[in-house]
Image 1 (tube, rainbow, N blue to C red):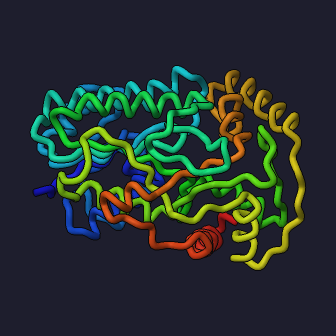
Image 2: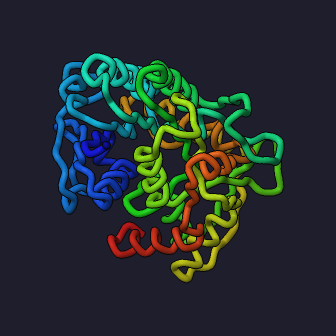
Length: 335
């Protein structure tokens, strides 16, 4: 029986919602947190802190002892270099896996939160399924795929899964916030795609649905799936980049002015910010590594496998989720 659950990345956007969902189900939550991590989103939820980080093997040994399940959310979505992406997303995962093998050999479930980027964008106008060969376009995606490979080292000993969310949005998120702030100012900047398409398309999932799905998979019986498998965890609704802006603007009563951004401009800004980032030792959301992701014609995936195997289906429509998100942003003065 699963009762004690360790969550890495618990103080972050997705991780804090996973903590909320675990608490709602009456489970005992342990949060792996660095000393510098903010507990802002965890203050109202009972939890126990296990201090440590994915770079400190000894701290991971202590953190995993006595756990029934681990939900590994921690990772880097932006980084100043390929090496840094791999250190966080691949080798950090490797160190956690080794800690489990050494200190928690009777663990009942290990869930690794990967990304659609570990599979790649859609190039043929359809949607990706889990059996499609990968088409990786960024160091981020490569590092998340390597993280999945590290988790598969557990597969013969411990029931483990990787989940690949697409675009995730909801309260507490600062990634989609930039788009929301742009819509709140009345602008709809449309990114180009290579190859060109009439409209870029995205799979998506509201963060509370994602957290529910992650915990569903954590608590599910060991039936109907193979240890080490990967699953897309997505809502069925696919949206265009125009719909994203229009739905955000509608939620706050704004009208939008459409502008098209040329590819040369996106490339120039990405390379410029890349240079600035390397000089300052920091990373920006727009950087050369992200160009392949930004210019891809579609990031779409099918949720049919996870629905068939686990019975999971996201309950929140895109419009409803965006409405909740924009209201949350507005209440806190973020837009």
